[in-house]
Image 1 (tube, one colour):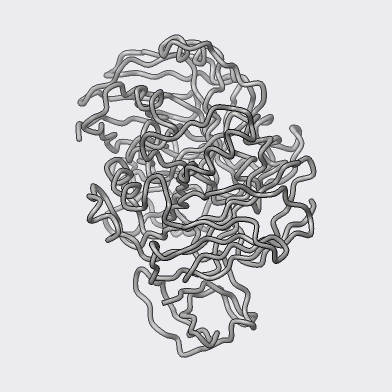
Image 2 (image 1 turned 90 degrees about the vertical axis):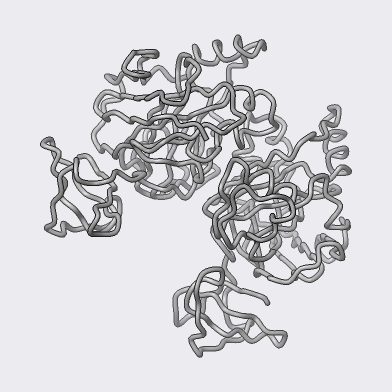
Length: 260
Length: 260
């Protein structure tokens, strides 16, 4: 089931169920809490797609695909440091934008790149979960683009502007409750040309491992998201570029870049 | 003016104005948006104090007092790295607890310490602010205790459990709109004994500098908080300890430690 968060000209933003024929059945309520159909329907082409959920806490695995770790280390001229345990990181809510919204390149940014990622959306409170129990708190999956400015990533003490400048975190287009991670491929296209392609499941630490470990210290809450990291490398992006992150079964997250 | 977020047995949590005599005038609404008095009053001793605001994005300066940077570097045996620019960091909403709530020491935590900090609460959207304009987006100030497990802080790739384990971020007790930073002193007591004392204003980078720099890349939003860092060092805390962080004019944030 595809859960879209959208706004139409005649109403506040709502969740809706998106069908194969691009019709949306609007609901009142929250998909992972209680909801009911309102009876109103829309067509996807007539609505604005919104960020599918604004998380309470915005988690991100960061380094979680071995090839990406090697390639990034090579780029900045350091020895690759492969994480030895599933230590989760964070991104910032201020940076979120929806499918088809602009990523704004700050005036002094130089090396802006994409990172296509699968995103886990939490639906139930989870604490002290084993790896076998870990997926019980998951509601569904969506796509994230962890836009990064590589010079700031190397120079700054934190990732505050390298990864969390306003508009640097596209997420969407919707939340899919059915997802076959083992079969999934992540493909990133710039202006229609495939630039990155990898098996989504080839993570250093998997979703179950992260959730189980996190939940020993942290309660995961409904609406929290976990971005699972990316593989491969990205070309430098420029104003005017259109980036599409496609993950099998989850759809395509598309955003265009604009100069500040 | 002191803004308290509180719950009484007969109602959902609300904001209220706290008077010198500990009476609370309840309001409907949000202090930095629109509000009106409900006419209901309570006494402070009859209500539960809640976290004064759950931020959209939870910012933290981290290393921002020179003595603390030297003492922490000495403790972990590295050369002190004094930040050369105001790079903001993050903490996680999941970890917030209110005044008088318990800080739970995880079963495998060893070196748990306090960090008493002044907290800036944003009241208006702020973007591209100069240092002179920076305080125009500030609503008020409160107190934070950046509880930290030092071994995890040194061993983990991120601060996820070192600083963001559940209950590791006490904040409160209320938001004070009038605050004389230059006159303020931060005092931290453990079981009534003063363990740390410093001038709150002796920051490496001040509030204006952080807000102005942040706002070049990030829009600050109403309800966001910025924890400004701490000075000095802390003894190891144990279950049963009571930690009080007092900042002149802002009150006392008190929390007790409990073993998991």
